[in-house]
Amino acid sequence: MSEQLTNEQLIQIANEFGTPVYVYNADKIETQYQRLSNAFGAERVKIFYAAKALTNLSVLRFIHHLGANVDCSSINEVKLALRAGFEPSRVLYTSNGIHFTEIEEALKLGVFVNIDSLSNLKKLGEKYGNQYPVGVRLRPNIMAGGNLKISTGHDRSKFGIPVEQLPQLMDIVKSSNIVIHNLHIHTGSDIKDADVFIKGIDVLFDIIPHFPDLKSIDLGGGFKVGYKEDDPVINIEELSQKVLAAFDAHEAARHLEIWFEPGKFIVSESGCLITSVNLLKETAATTFVNINSGFNHLIRPMFYDAYHRIENITNPEGAVNTYSVVGNICETDTFAWDRPLPEVREGDLLVFYNAGAYGYEMASTFNSRFRPAEVIVRNGKAQLIRKRDVFEDLIRNQVEVDLK
Ligand code: LLP
View 1 (tube, protein in one colour):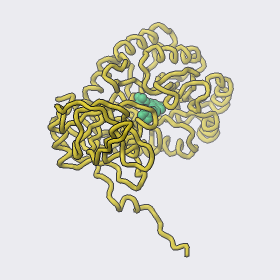
View 2 (cartoon, protein in one colour):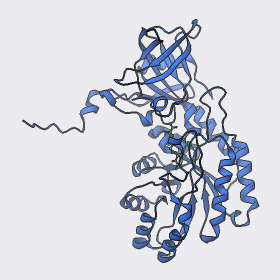
View 3 (cartoon, protein in one colour):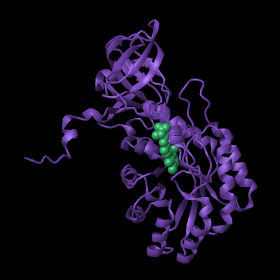
View 4 (spheres, helix red, strand yellow):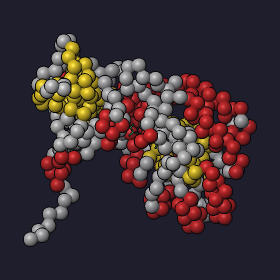
């Protein structure tokens, strides 16, 4: 097993499958999952992979094979997970702002659902009473996460039922005899501090006595991975130790399962995006490197100001210069401004690391450009798991009408 693909492997993949191409190292997905299951060794801890980070069916199938459960954020993710082989009992659907019919569809597929609004909880109670045990997603009013766009538990966030609305929630639960098996919170992504989870636990522990049927507490995902070399990351072992200690110390929580929903932690570092250099443009302010990609393929730098390590894998020993790496999209799509890189030449391959999570998954066909191909490497063997779009994909669902 190899944690890191070599430049030679990546160059070979670029030659075989073309660029831009997302490449995932399955061995790295496995080691990340093993790290989690070793850290949270306890029987009572369940890991649900947050599929939204990367939903390719072959990746889902592999993560199922590793022994994980899966957390979904739409009915289509539920269907993808089932198609990839997850048994309904291993699928969780943490819904957010959805129409009630989607909840019904998920329940009928045998999947466990976390409900995030009083409105849908009421509809569930009125239609099904105690027929389907569910979870409720609460908003704990905690500010957490790498930036406001990915912070989901604060007191102005749309996610979950605000914890101060517990009396209304209880009225609905009691009047329809709804069976609540799980309390859920997810406070954000890029959380580096284990104590954020402890803060969330404290909020939930106070309200456990209201839910006599409770079986689990779901603390969501958000474990921070390192994008820069010296980035602080979450310490999984410390997190596990603190969380287990908190549950053991609280009488009413000792019998409960503990659930987590990590996405980035499992797949982010496994993935990279290989692009090639179209041209260089010297200007007074900077030297632009135009690559054959843009925020249509990797939106994180433009959307979150995210940093991704870039390497010039076809000239790694070149003399270092400073470049601004940009795409070919019709609006600003800067991947990196004034980044030192080994001399970049037209045709060189630039690789963006740590792009396995929310990379392909947030890609679009903006400017009518094709989404990249996806390739996975297992034990040194590279296999195509999604073809690059072709022109037909752009027009497949269009209905051409004549408006003359
Ligand atoms: N559970 C729930 C309910 C979530 O909303 C999320 C992420 C996760 C789990 C998994 O979080 P993770 O472990 O991957 O941080 N596109 C952004 C991240 C948005 C995360 C949205 N929800 C990014 O690229 O940074």
